[in-house]
Image (tube, rainbow, N blue to C red):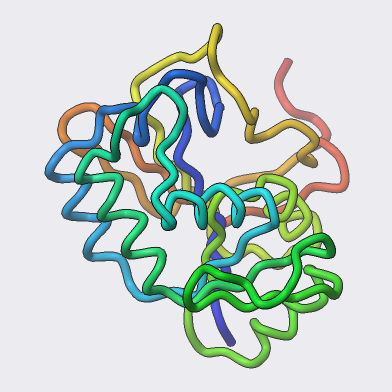
Length: 201
């Protein structure tokens, strides 16, 4: 069976992006970049909004406020272009222009459940907050990983990651610090029907 990883890059206060901030909040370092290059091959799962943004970057569109991509950002987009991608959308039209992308119009939860059953391999989300939330609610997520960058984007942050989530218990299975400032935490998630009873006040 394939493994499903929900994978987020966030500010400390849980935003997935921030107005005026570059990719990785401009704080990626050599340890973190080397770790990214070592990650196993995966099929990336995303929704329409993430596809539009990332395929635009792959086609040369630069984020607002930047004149050009930094080398680290360009390398990240190039790696995604080479990887297999599954896009869940009822609004996008075929053929998808971003290389190695497959469009799925059906129910994302049902399709990912079938993809897991067809395994082995690794399925990993990129962005796509509502897709990740749906997969977690359905109990399909095997690993939940967050890489937190040392910024608080209270004034400029966008895309609050955890809004609308159910209560989730998290069993830590890995943690690491990169470049003395970037914190990775990885968990096995368990969706809760209700908060645990008898917890200390």
